[in-house]
Length: 585
Image 1 (cartoon, rainbow, N blue to C red):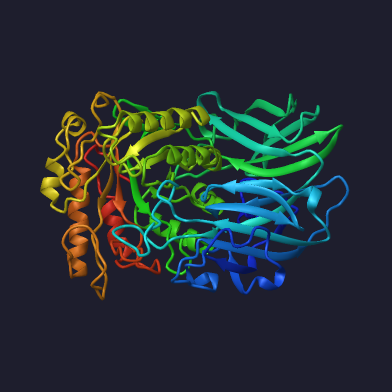
Image 2 (tube, helix red, strand yellow):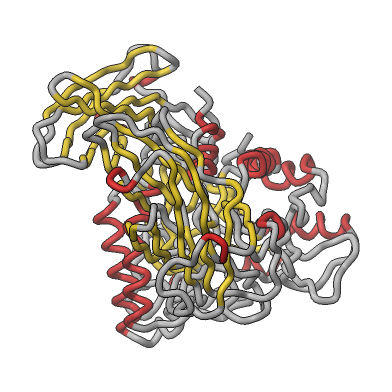
């Protein structure tokens, strides 16, 4: 099965309809101009979905920002008796209303996470689907790296609006699965399943696990009150130590099929997969599958010059291959949420992934409401992916700008950490990455010092790192007062950022002094990386960054994601021996 042929490779239903492609659209400045959807002849432009009209792939490439977009498309559907139809939007930025055949069928708020509507009651043989999107880029909503000003500035980029990830319709039987949680427990050789269903009816759920086509186990249980919660024993005599473990070097995945049965008849069938991977901290170490690991991450902004954050399968696959070719074992999906297909590629190709909620920029009751409303769907999107080992909730105090001095902001981030662990207790959680941390599983620092000797000297021991302000570029304390005594691992989660482009532009930038020669750039990357690897009691790093993004030209790849530097030279730098004695292939 080619999982990438499906919009969500981890939750495949064989009967589905792709709703991507060309839609009609109408750009509006005032969201109250149309109280009801416009007539079909008022849609005066066309747009490619998924994309934002602010990028070329959309077919519009607007320089003027419109806060309201109306979308319209027609499609045919064949709904058989006792079938249900589920309309899926992977992400619409920021707030939307949906009409199907003249009926308002749903509203969604939150620009980065998926949602699904059961549209069975409104579906016909020929259909008109209309979506109204509103996005004012307010600083109280999760924005990530989208500029809330008219122009780009510093490290904030072109804004996104509209249907910017996949749209599809899928068909099930009368009763179906609405939510799947599949969490591995390596020390019991079990997969813990929690399935929520659309109905409280007394149906059954059957789960079957296979590895490399061979049956591992199967189990059938009765659902209770719309839920089936049970464990599968996935121990296997063919595996070393009972399990085929997922790691970046051996990204082994099991196939998982899930079925809903009503009086013996299958009413829903989902093809999925899972990986047996555990992660924990022990003192200053991070352990994956009980083995100490050193993380070599690269910051991945996710931007394409032609389509912004709306990635493609070929582009994502090429980026992951290049990340691994350059010697990294992971990436930090920085200030954006990757597509279902990207997350599958991370699982299948073997790449540690830090999943990060896009940050707002202004603390208020409205901001807290907006952020918390989207958090459950953020976790749900990542929870079953073995590649995802860490959640980052806030970045560099964006949105909690006075967290070092304001107990309310500290309490908010502490609450987010606790809430995240309630939804998913199996992963590491970082409350505020970079500085001024409160509750966290990992202490992280951002340091763009371009003097290698000074960089190493800034981190002589964990006491100095945790009690003070070691970063020479931020000057911020690692922890807020009262949080310094946490016994957690340390990672330098941003460094480098060396700007280089063949034809330097006056408005482009990176961190530190601009270096003119490619050889000097390579030498600087090597010196800084050796300095980072020499920091004692450090569990890893994240280099800034994968590719150039608009005005920021500190990528190892250029704006078109082509190598700036021979990848073999980069690979040699990032796979050098670490001071702990680990050598990475």
